[in-house]
Image (cartoon, rainbow, N blue to C red; front, top):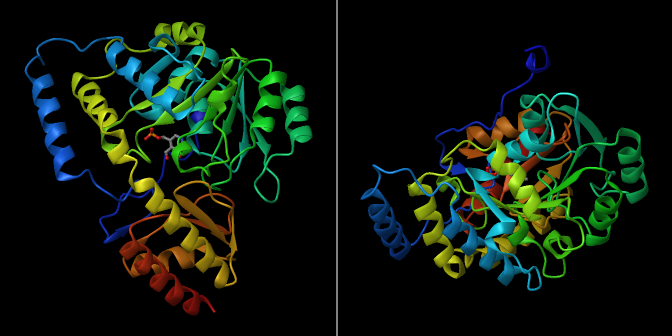
Length: 357
Ligand code: PLP
């Protein structure tokens, strides 16, 4: 395929090193108690693995709706307004299969999550690259001008944004949702880490039927291995997704594990406060080193600038600390880990900075 030639596949290295801070996972594995609950739920599902799973995952979707209503009182979601798939990557793919495709285009504001343009291309949709400001925020007038010029079928907003960590004020999202001619996707993979005064786009759903808010269990929920992403939207959007999903796309095992995780949401999300504290500490420390640091509302921090970031990345890897070369060319991203992992990060970066001097 001409439009895929020369493109990079998703490229985060999966290296077996002592300190892995490169894919924004939660560093805390499930507790023993939760492992037992998961094992029980998976065993119960295993007893009927001769049968296909619930194709519509209705129980899971109802429980996700309850969880979101708790997160954003007033969202008033039901199973008919919530959809689930194998990670928010599959959610993004299904959205593009339903609303993109040949002859259509999707627009995003870079630097942002690399899979938005990659999946856009995979679905034969044209990608339009608009830009964020110097401080990685969005200027509303420029954003609206880009939308007006290209009339995209799908707009991607990511808040908090990956890899910058910056959040968008609700007024910016609302202005874009009001002006965009097609669907507006707000990717909130890191929503649980945002500051208390930053509101979720779930607040806007009732007023904007073409708005889609996506979430995942891979980050704050510490369930990246389960592969469960979900979204909230108008019921007509869910009906469109039903037309493109593969039958029985969510296995019984995935549904059982995700429902168990949701039943223990308070325990799982208990690590969020600790990760926020650790994030703010590392932001302060990096600034203390004289580095530039993007404001982060997520569980990772983008920092720079380095004339040759590969040298810093490699010097850290040589010390067993894997971070990520992503975003603008002179910046690096570190995922927030445990206090011990962050101590290893600080020590490795101190050595790396001396090496490049
Ligand atoms: N969206 C954003 C902004 C992300 O950073 C990621 C993962 O890094 C995803 C979506 C995909 O997550 P998953 O497919 O694990 O739900």
